[in-house]
Image 1 (cartoon, rainbow, N blue to C red):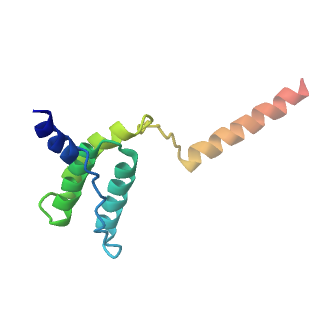
Image 2: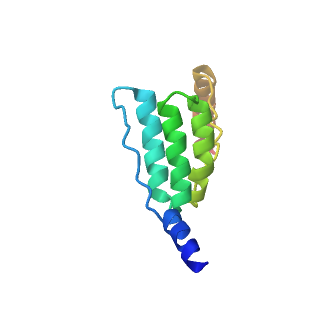
Length: 116
């Protein structure tokens, strides 16, 4: 019985190779391949690498869309990286006219503060 389990464990431990199907002339595919490649390099599990290869090959055969590819890839990106987060930052802006009003008011106030 132990002999039967050994071949199965050897199959599981087989090293998975990274797919080399990059298309530099196709920007969207090239960006997807870079994301796949970066994730593949960070992952240790051979089983997970096999799943990543399946996702990438599905994209190359146009069996799945880019949005589905990134959604599925994102699950594995989180596994490979501890600090995978995109904190949202609020950017506050103002109109130029409002900025000028504020500047002139601040300048006027600073002049009067200096006289006291």
